Picture 1 (tube, rainbow, N blue to C red):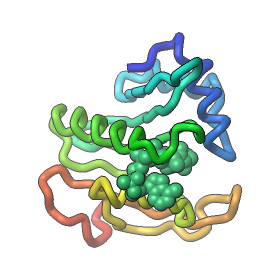
Picture 2 (picture 1 turned 135 degrees about the vertical axis):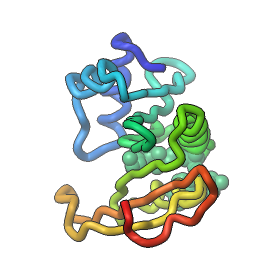
Picture 3 (picture 1 turned 90 degrees about the vertical axis):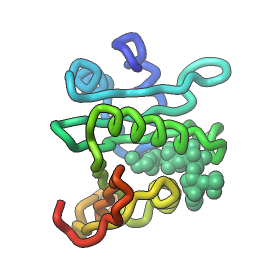
Length: 151
Ligand SMILES: CC(C)(COP(=O)(O)OP(=O)(O)OC[C@H]1O[C@@H](n2cnc3c(N)ncnc32)[C@H](O)[C@@H]1OP(=O)(O)O)[C@@H](O)C(=O)NCCC(=O)NCCS
């Protein structure tokens, strides 16, 4: 689990992976939140290879961010982190996890589809840099298909 000592490295990884990085302050806030969790995978030399941030509120989870350093991609790190997040969230009594992903983010959509997330809605034009729709995805721990839009 990430601690305040990881903020600099989390920020460094985030800047490599996102057009709109969160910034150090936001990572500090996430680490301080009782309902937020951040897991990291250390890089081979320095910095982080991958990270995931999620919330657990009541009986629902929400994945906010998954990032793998460009030098470590397609090695299964994000798959491992998402699987661990789902295991922990389910272990804490949640059987639904939501997230939003940019429609044109092929890598992330491939990842979440591979992990069993299903599309349950769409927000047209939700992202502005670059302009894109947000696709709402849901995973269900009870194995039921996530169809419809009863989020
Ligand atoms: C999306 C991201 C986290 C994937 O990380 P990764 O560690 O490379 O992913 P994995 O190696 O665990 O891949 C797991 C599966 O995701 C899918 N996937 C990953 N990258 C993909 C790509 N470029 N194109 C298509 N599918 C892809 C595949 O199904 C893959 O399984 P496979 O390798 O057996 O085919 C990474 O590309 C990234 O950091 N992107 C920038 C940040 C981002 O968009 N995060 C997600 C939104 S919060």
